[in-house]
Image (tube, rainbow, N blue to C red; front, side):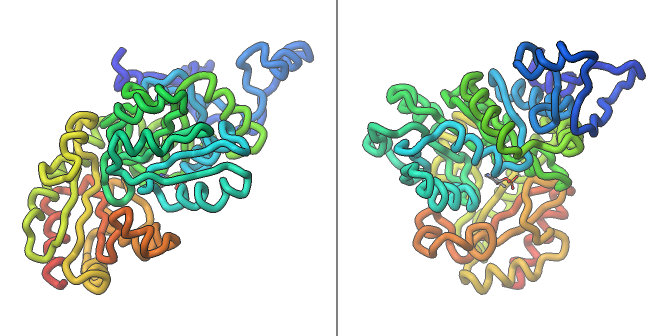
Length: 388
Ligand SMILES: *Cc1c(COP(=O)(O)O)cnc(C)c1O
């Protein structure tokens, strides 16, 4: 079956009620018929559910769908994207190991890597998103254990060649871990390009409706086993209710992402050359600096457009304050279009120099394009630009 079909058809086993849609298994623990069965479950002799911190049918259904879409061997779902990312680091890195990360990454991921990993004796360094193959090779140290990438990057929409980094990682026996949040498996599948692990914030496009937090990490079986063991002891389990919501969302992911992307391409094209806009970026516009890589590894350009309003910080604020329909909120990947100002919000903890190094200029606006009619989204942006 096609992964899109699997993402719709994978389902918990029917109960005696013969339900069509998966029920919610809101239970913290699971029963055993006798002491021997319970002993066997605890001894890992079978896959029986024990306790929802370890596993739960709703969580499994959601995880299995992402495993199918990403073409992975196995997966583990978590309470948020950050716990998936943190778990993938802490389960697989130890004191003395080195993590090499691209420099344009989600703000909280940057905090984990820069502030917390060194506390545990894990070395870290950053490499620019546009580094050459030789620069990547040079950045790998004898103790490099993992390469971490985000592509497209949040919020700068830079694109990194996953296949190229996959080859480098394989050559040096380094784990390649890719945050696929911005693209989703509908648009790109990093494992097919050489990644060992893929992490997601399910809070964004996977839910797609701004309702619940969630995260998931999928990839090679032996790596996921370590992450599972770390998480089952440390406790960032995904709530069964959130998993039920997310699993339903995945059934419409393909159609949603297609519309998000076609709306986004329309908006990007319409705003190109707008007199109030300095630089506009969208992966599937030929003017994007890594357009060729985007075309090679992505099915479409995704749902995020960013641009720099002329007049820097002040006009960036004017723009946001003049919007009538678009929401000002910290999320992205919603049915509703959202505008945000990364320099003062998601990436405020970075220094000005760190922000500029990853193209987060003071007037940068990030728009997460929703599913409203494209003309309404465009008209709101145009009228707000008029006030800048
Ligand atoms: C939001 C986000 C995260 C963090 O996910 P949460 O679900 O908020 O914990 C990680 N990476 C990227 C690219 C994100 O946009």
